[in-house]
Image (cartoon, rainbow, N blue to C red; front, side):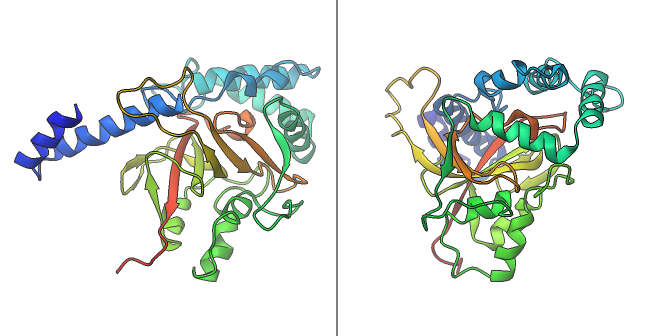
Length: 286
């Protein structure tokens, strides 16, 4: 496919169908490497739901079951109205009526930190842990040198992802990350930023539609070497590890696999979770 498309591009350099096909091949390879599904839908690892499904609180267990169905696509939004499924609305309402959001956030963060593949107290590059009060995006971006960036934009970046449990989610990362000289890439490497989104928002970045509103931001800290094109990819994809702080109130950051995330953060039905990678250019564009 690569050879055929390279030949087609040489003959038809301005044909949008050729450039679209090249992008699809690149995405297909990325999905295979990362184990996230050929349709482009980000796959949350099943273990992420396990502590919620096993909770002694039946409301948390019921909410987790509905979230898993929403994320898998088996419980879609209403096709005619676009409204979230009733099962999801009822489970969210019951849970939030029974447990105050700050307490619920603490429960969810504690369950996430107890997963076997999650290491609490991930360190920032300066050796500190990012205690309570440091926002989700602020923690992730502290892994990237930003001394030469506009500092007002750096300060605004703390609000790229909801700093609190019930803040309205947003997709402002599409506008602010380019100001900080980040651009979207297909295959990650250490030093990149991963932006996780949920729900559907029709707004374009330079590589096409971004479906979703920011729910989590993380720093990529490890990526297994990508095998040559003629070599098989390990079952389940390559290992990609990230550092994130899934709640502003959390006492520390966490080191975890790309697909092992707190499912409750992706609580806007309609699409995803999805994940996108951004890399910062060392030099301003000419």
